[in-house]
Length: 531
Image 1: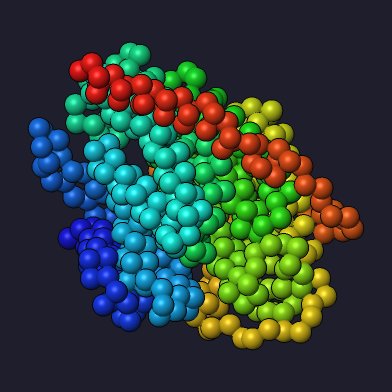
Image 2 (image 1 turned 90 degrees about the vertical axis):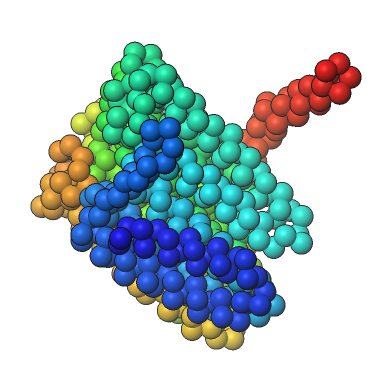
């Protein structure tokens, strides 16, 4: 019963707000925050009791949902971030906004992620996967009267939707390969070459959802949505879903000869390249978006290198850190009216509390000791080192780049400031110290003395924990990147190909969208004139 309630509460409450619409606008923030709070209580109870349910669906298939160690960590992460984001949104959105629509969509979005992380078969997973995609489209284009925001929502939706076809391919190949029940645990048993097709479909869908190369550009477009949407989408839902799926299906990847290597290199190359893209961005939210692709690249690297526990630790620490940073950026946008780094000089000095908690999150993102991602990233790197020294070196290079983009941002926001602007709504600030504490402390499970226990909790195989010397080395690299960037007196040169996210959107339009559109026109004419 607990698991059904955990899933139904945000989904049903969100649907009710959507159906009611504007008449519920006045009470929507209270209802949304209340539902999120109850969801968190249920998530804690589910994490402790580990419920499992199974119900018949159709044609011999069953709905399978369960909370194990990995799911327990994820449902808690989703629930905590949901509460923080909706409290912030209650302070950001005024009466003129469609508050019922916003809170309703956010609750349904989070509910779909809860289904995703508790699903035990591809049928349920696919349903939740699709709901997340639809909600992301609606939330990115929430201010629908502005055409460019709607266009951004459509591009994000179509890009991830194209990659999502991989899950349908995987489901069909699993049936053809003899996995009749379509359970996730049964996928490695798919016969012969069908298993490789299943893996290829899963990797394609996960890369698209988590904005790994070459799909990363859609996350840049997602920045046109409200800041609370960015905070939830980038931390505990949608973008995290693809990386989570690779962690969940690590045994499936390991059952092939090629997938672990491909996935590991996909993750580390994305971490390095998108980190470089983050360095040259002039928009604070674009810096954070590129860093999301980069940091989730470490999670994908862990899945490929056979370290699901290390990947889970990175995923959770990143969720707390990134939700803090996006809400901090959103608070500055409310107070100062800009997210352009060239106009955010001294922003941290103007709002000291906001500046301090943002700095904690930024330093955590860079992997500076003793904050969380310093430990979780090193757990991933230790796994990579056991798999391939080349992966480890590339990962260290990506860690250095993380320090550079963080140092650049902090140098700007801590410049001497002018007069302090008006005070911010307290609801915008209340969630931030809690998230800052989480960003600082959540890496504790990756320390050498606790790594084995965390690995047993998540249920993955035992992998080498980072040694204290490795932790010291990566910490020094992160600090060096931050200090070097913060000390750099000149403005960072905007490199066109990096500033425009490698022109990936243009390539996708030219290589995929236009040819498909022309083919559709030809087929439509054939249908009208011949058929």
